[in-house]
Structure formats: structure tokens, C-alpha cells
Length: 240
Image (cartoon, rainbow, N blue to C red; front, side, top):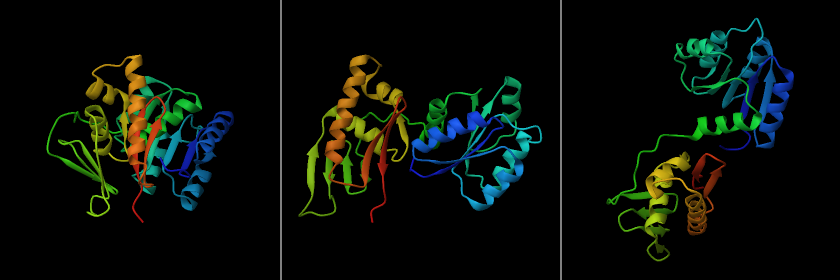
């Protein structure tokens, strides 16, 4: 997730709102906390939000009204709703609101942050650890899956660099490069490359990620970002 995204927190508990706002701002977001409908509407008029976190609402707030307002403003805004009971969860699910993720009760700021990151970036990745003739192109690199050849500056014959990756390096890069700017979960990597999750596999994965970072370091528009306890993102910025 890029820094300085705006997040709106709607909750009547000032202590909770301040705690979450402070944590999110340390992570690079700009967080706004509100308790009234009027302030929420004013903020929507003055700002563009990537996320809205909805907790315990004041008595004059109905969850359906809040969700409909968000949908009217921008139906691509991602929403986290912290529900307090199973019946509340079921009633929200019946609304079929796009980009809405439900999480139970009030969790600590770190867990809510992890939900925000995974909600924005996580995607289902189908197993792709297989030999085929696919060539993946990303930024200044190309990667031949079947030959396991990683080429930097592939469009420049007189200035290109070609590296042959190992089988596991190739499988890891294939998984990350096939879903750029999205999280590929550790569970997906364990399943498709190491077949199970054990301590030595965890350490091995981190070693292979470090190797890929070194191979890709020639291109400043590319990063492999570790989303702690969730997975990895091959972050690609547009070429200028």
C-alpha cells in the first residue's frame, strides 16, 4: 500500500479512534476519526479516502445509512466493518456491499492494520509452480518461466543482462510476478514451492526472497515488500 493514503475511522469511542489513528499514521497513512454524520459528510466532500473503518456507531448512525453513503461517494472505497454480534454480521452481509470486509469485535490497532493491508492487496493466487512457455514482463525485466531466464533491459540487445535462476528461485519469482502489486501469501508459497510449512522452510523462503531482491536491484522501480505475517508483494512503480 502506498504511503499517505487517507483512512476514515467512524467510531463513538474516542480512545479507540485515537489509538488506531496514531498507529496508522506511524505506518504512513493519514487517519481521520469522526463520531457524527455531519463531520463524516464534510470530510467526504473535502478528501478522497482509500479506506473506511466502521466500529461502534452513535445512536443516530445506522450502519446501512453509512454504507450507502460511502457507496454513493465512491463505490471503490474499501470498507472494514467491526461487528459486535453474529446477527449484526449477518444483517451487513445481506446488504451485499462491494469491497466490504467484516472482522469480529474490536481488535488491537496492529491486527486492524493487517486487515487493511490484506484487504487492499490480497488476492487469490492459483498454483502456478509448473513448467510452461510463459514469459512474464514487468518493468525492465522479462522472465522466461520454462528456461528460468531473468533478463534485465530485455529490449536492448547491446545492454541486456541475463541470469539463470534455480528451480525454487524461478518458482518464487513466477508466483510474485504473475500478480504484481498484490500480496502473495506465505501459505500460497509454502503450498506451491515447499509443499508444507516448517521452521526451516520459513527461513529458506526468506533467503530466496533476499536473493530475488538482489537480482531485481538493477531496477529502482521494483521492490519485494514483506507484509509481516501475511506474505510478499512485488511492488512495481510505473516507468517514468
